Length: 114
Length: 117
Image 1: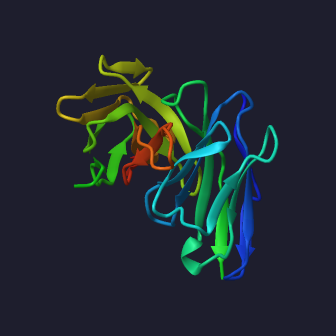
Image 2 (image 1 turned 45 degrees about the vertical axis):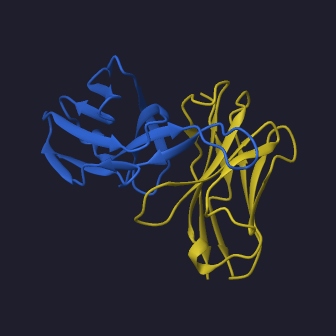
């Protein structure tokens, strides 16, 4: 069964450093998303991406964040200068040919900012 | 009012019990509805989509009432493996990046279910 994959599973970084979180969505999916979940809190939407551009972003997704689909398979989230409050689980998701189809989530990257 | 609000729980039930979760959502523009389950420190996994006509998948039944903006999930004959956090999720089309949005999921805070022997 096709699945979304994410690397690394855990990333530890120093405050102020740049991190890149990587995702490989399901191969025939067209819509891509990043969500995050701070420990003990609910899952929050960050950004949606379709046709090589951002279609919506949340208030959390400020200028420190960017997304890219550098080739036909990878989808990346970059945080330019990490803050302590960026520590969270980051989930990538993808959905198929219709925007309101179910979204399937990757296993997440746990980001720890020290 | 929270965008998606669920029973706070936690629910602690014996094996074989029937348990019901309730959820309300505030955005009437929401267009699709789901229940996900999340195990501790894992990703949300789709349990089922929810339709206005109601739908059933084995021991799980989901209902949607658009007029009252209410979603429910019923689990019959609970198993130990049903222990998880159940997430009520709505998909809303918006758009704030200069183009049409292609949906974002808004999650409830989740309801913890523990099924004990």
